[in-house]
Amino acid sequence: MVSSKVRFGILISFVTISGFSQGMLLPLLAIILEQNGVSSSVNGLHATGLYIGVLLASPFMEKPLQKLGYKPIILIGGFLVVASLAFFPIWQALWFWFILRLLVGIGDHMLHFATQTWITSTAPPERRGRIIAYYGLFFSLGFSLGPTMTRLLTIHESLPFIVAATLCFIVWSLMFFVRNEFVNTNDGIETVEMKSSIGRFIKTGKIAWVALLAPFAYGILEASLHGIFPIYGLRIGHDVNLISLVIPFFSLASLITQIPLGIASDKIGRKRMLLLVITCGILIFFIGALLEDSVVWIFVTFAGAGMFLGSLYSLGVSYMADLLPKALLPAGNIMCGIAFSLGSITGPFLGGKFIELFPNTSFFYVIIALLLIVMLAIASKKETVDVMRAS
Image (cartoon, rainbow, N blue to C red; front, side):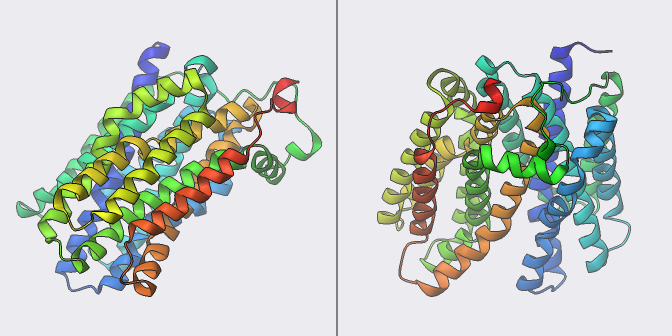
């Protein structure tokens, strides 16, 4: 069996391939369905299948992880992703593809949940920010590379699915060389209310609610920038080719700063780092709102926002792990995934409503309002050592 360092590399490769499959499916299926004459509204609803799969699977993840350990959950999740990607070319029916999206969402969430919990449970507190930053970095890398698969459509419509399924299978097979481990629940703090899954979720929410706001905000931000800004950008006169170039800058710029921000959060604390990056994000979007007619400033806005706010998810996960005892980390990681998915679902709706109700107001102001709310909530969190963690 492999060493702990090699195991970490394999877990990170799963994170990368998960981001890759998500980043590929969103634009790829949208393009194919558009070419087949599917309406934009149905196309948009169809895209929610992946996130609905995440929400459907979330309540049932914790118990199997505790009984089976990390490895079986990752293998099952990886198999669902590989099999679903391989089945896309077999039959092109709208309802069939929606089911496959659901299965990819379930499989991806199993991968995320198990790898994220394994990493957060084994990361030493003094290096947790750096280690989890690698998690965010490689997911963003995979998500950024995923859309490049759309170019293979010019060769054959099935080729992107075949290539993606093959890559996922290669990474999936590496898991057989990793020794299984189980969740550490022996920290002496289990109470009656924590013996049930609902009790653990309630307890987790009470302790770490503030940390969950960062993944939620990141979900809204990423989904609305990818799904609503293209509509707004066209309305204010920007070229469609420009928009297709500027959107990836958010994810690409986050690759530069994920690790430095993670290391800095280990030194100055997660709360201070979250407040710092959100404040910078607000300033960047405010300047962007004033200068949104400038092509250069649109690029600067997306790149600057990515450099700071692209780490919201990983910083939120690190903050959650700081606040919770190890017995509650599985529930905490599930709730981070739920928060991100809820943000991803509600973001495009809120953004679409905003530009519909306020057509003459910059779309960036709704993002600024969201970030202000999250910043105030995090600032209100008292810096106290949790009673459960200290016992």
